[in-house]
Amino acid sequence: MAPSKSTLLPLLGALPYASAWGSLGHTTVAYIAQNFVCDKTAKFAQSILNDSSTAYLANVATWADSYRYTAEGEFSALLHYIDALDNPPESCNVVYERDCPEEGCIVSAIANYSSRAVQKKLGIVEQQKALKWVIHFLGDIHQPLHVENLAIGGNTINVTFAGVKTNLHAIWDTNIPQKARGNFSQAASLAWATNLTTEIKHGKYKKESKVWLKGMNVKDAVDSAMVWANDANQYVCSTVLPNGTDVLFGQELSGAYYETAIPVVYKQIAKAGYRLAAWLDAIVEAAEKGGHGPGKGSKYDKRGDFELEPWMQASREARMAFGGDCGCSAEEHTH
Ligand SMILES: *[C@@H]1O[C@H](CO)[C@@H](O)[C@H](O)[C@H]1NC(C)=O
Ligand SMILES: *[C@@H]1O[C@H](CO)[C@@H](O)[C@H](O)[C@H]1NC(C)=O
Ligand SMILES: *[C@@H]1O[C@H](CO)[C@@H](O)[C@H](O)[C@H]1NC(C)=O
Ligand SMILES: *[C@@H]1O[C@H](CO)[C@@H](O)[C@H](O)[C@H]1NC(C)=O
Ligand SMILES: *[C@@H]1O[C@H](CO)[C@@H](O)[C@H](O)[C@H]1NC(C)=O
Ligand SMILES: *[C@@H]1O[C@H](CO)[C@@H](O)[C@H](O)[C@H]1NC(C)=O
Ligand SMILES: [Zn+2]
Image 1 (tube, rainbow, N blue to C red):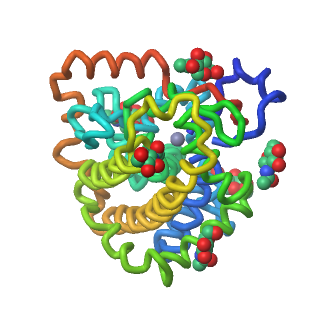
Image 2 (cartoon, rainbow, N blue to C red; image 1 turned 90 degrees about the horizontal axis):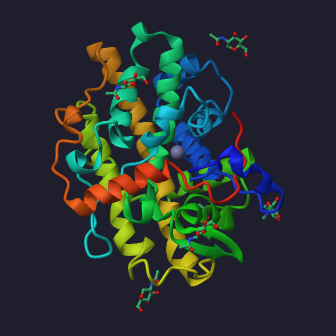
């Protein structure tokens, strides 16, 4: 979810406003989580974030996307995704040792920052950053193209959306959600969150949401996040590029493609909010009970512990050369 690099800012006037899950998706995820966390978790988060307003999680949901563009926060850009070196559309899977390099990825970051968020000894400033990252990364890990290496997470697949030149990654982050719910605003996010919360509690997700927490284990953050990553990654094969990449180049995707994508976007945003609430409850509870908070898991330090095949090495290098984001659609960002 990528606001553009400042070098592209001169283009802003020429291109329509788009906001990096974009701000709309992330803020919606945070509002949904607010509807499900228990009181103790809400108090903890309000205190760490120094915000007792009715938007205490929503207000910080996109901080990580601004921070990654600061000199201080640059290191965190690669923590917004895990680049699955799988083979869609034939086979989709995420493997921690293979896909999370030694430098880290969204899965190791969720483990690291979930633990740091509840460690009082780190001090409020570090705890606050850690909590903001957890809130953001639980959103990103539900975007199928944040758990896929192919075409650099879809960034190099040029398409148009409602006539505007963009790419596959950006339309999943922003254009598809905004076509459904309108441009980003706190109010649009709140309305969407209210819609999805009702669907979870009483509507079309009532039954299936019972299994959304399967595999979540506060003693093993890596295993938990890998369940979420693999879940989202399945949609790369089934929905994002079921007929491969070649058929997508240069296509207009705001029609039939949008119609197949939008139910998945709704469901992934709902899941992300629901899981974020449960995960925050779990880490707060674990910190209170055990003193140590959540466990990172036995695989945590095994990232990069895999011999990559030559094509995988090349794909990894292509991503590194490209950088963390697309930088190809003008997206407003503030530091
Ligand atoms: C908390 O917020 C209040 C009001 O915005 C501000 O005055 C105070 O300095 C903040 N405290 C911390 C620890 O950030
Ligand atoms: C965990 O987060 C801290 C703070 O950002 C960072 O200094 C540290 O390197 C991280 N640990 C790992 C293993 O990435
Ligand atoms: C895709 O679009 C970008 C930005 O407009 C451009 O730089 C790039 O050459 C295009 N790639 C292809 C394969 O057309
Ligand atoms: C979204 O913002 C763009 C650019 O400001 C504007 O052209 C468009 O009409 C807006 N869409 C809606 C649905 O408000
Ligand atoms: C949520 O929004 C969708 C799409 O507009 C709509 O079909 C559904 O009825 C809404 N659900 C609720 C509970 O309002
Ligand atoms: C993939 O191909 C099938 C069969 O031709 C078609 O029904 C479907 O719409 C295509 N999906 C996408 C996303 O291109
Ligand atoms: Zn992000």
